[in-house]
Length: 127
Image (cartoon, rainbow, N blue to C red; front, side, top):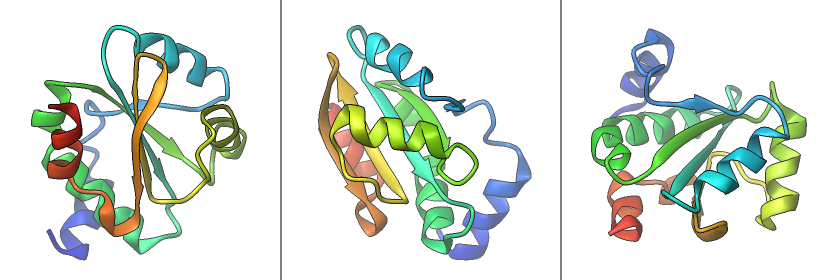
């Protein structure tokens, strides 16, 4: 997927049903709790970063397969800075964007950033 396709997908609004939005620090508690029953994927995104648009597009391309195994959560790190800081501190994962964090049974089991964010790599972790 190219940069322009990723940007188009991001602004089209067609992906809204894929993501549960993280908008405040307390949302993280619920996500950690849910990970006891089903893996949870947190995607951290900045609208100021072109790499983020490509990463988000890649995840959305793989969303059908990913959603079979995990819930997907979207965090706009610029708009919701306090939630982003909470994710970094409570999960003990250094902040980056774009970034994917995979939780299972209350623990971070895998995380990646930038060009390492690929649906196929996440699916390997979920298998």
